[in-house]
Length: 280
Ligand SMILES: [Zn+2]
Image (cartoon, rainbow, N blue to C red; front, side, top):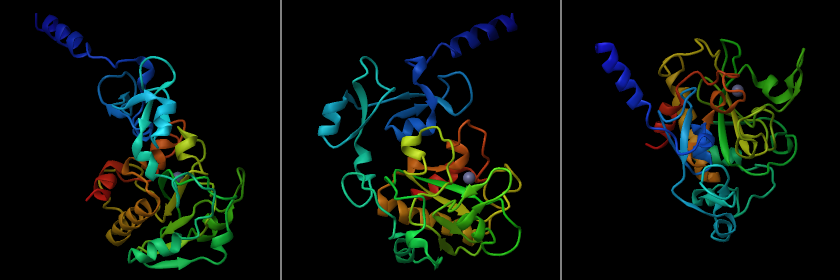
């Protein structure tokens, strides 16, 4: 009898389903499209959530109003798209995405009261100009256990070995003392394959490599990080958000957007806690 009641309960609790199976997508991607992710309505991993949009409209109308339309999370015809008005503040410098080098990075951080080291040649370093700054991706270096920013040469010059990657590997480095290293103003190879290249790809996102061993791989809180470094991480990201108009939903951990999901573990602190701090 108890088993039977339990069975009925289970059936009912799974009765609620997402409005469309194709709207079951990664929660971070959903937020980046201007949608609202809801838990417990989709099968699969916890990050796969039911994405719905409160602002569906014709894509052309959306653009004419200054929004950015995204496909896949509105019902009906493919021209009915989620209109993300928040995205209008995303592009760098101007109202529309402008290709340029981010030569203002050092000043943005310094003006936020942070200590900044300008690494020689940073203003012209990069794999070309940035297309836009739609997101900020937080990483850890998984580097040496001692020193402020022992990963500097790797992040600046790249990795050799079996799978070589040419530098720069991130625009910014963050030392254990909370000091920021401005390494490159252009595109940096930090993101790799991501869930949505138009938002999180290298040409649309700033990469920050914070010095840390990255061990233990998973734990709650940030108690393995020096407090001065963690607080500087928050302060620096806030300053970058304000300068480039990046909403907090688009401040993500590499582990949240690297595809396939699970490919990257960094950074090894909870991003929800980090994002909450950005809003305080
Ligand atoms: Zn990473």
